[in-house]
Image (cartoon, rainbow, N blue to C red):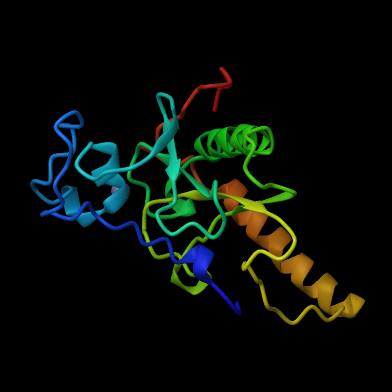
Length: 192
Ligand SMILES: [Zn+2]
């Protein structure tokens, strides 16, 4: 990554000493959020956020370090640190909400000529808040977001070798028991 600002989702807590207007009393700058997770703090109402959407399973709020105006995060209500921790229905619901928000941003009046949906899973992928979150990132020509990579075209043998390994991974996944204890959002009425 060249400029990796988007992955560095640092959500600052509300400064303790910041005087708030009397008409917004619901910003208690009190105890730390459970286990220090800033998103759990937002979900608990202990950390300030600018909410745009919520349902039984996810919330969406503005990224406090927006790459472009309208940069949103969609966050499950459950503290799942990694993709490994949530089931596929929960992942599908996360995407469904991000999809809707991406379409909403295009209709919002904010500058939005394109959208990136971006999920950083793991430290190697620049995840910084270890509570799964999906970025909805409005894009336009000349914005500051960059992804640098070696975009060379691989030879077919290399691709086939990697594909075989991934297929092995799929077979292994198929042999695993369904993850116990993970919640299903059930938003689509689907069964697991
Ligand atoms: Zn959390």
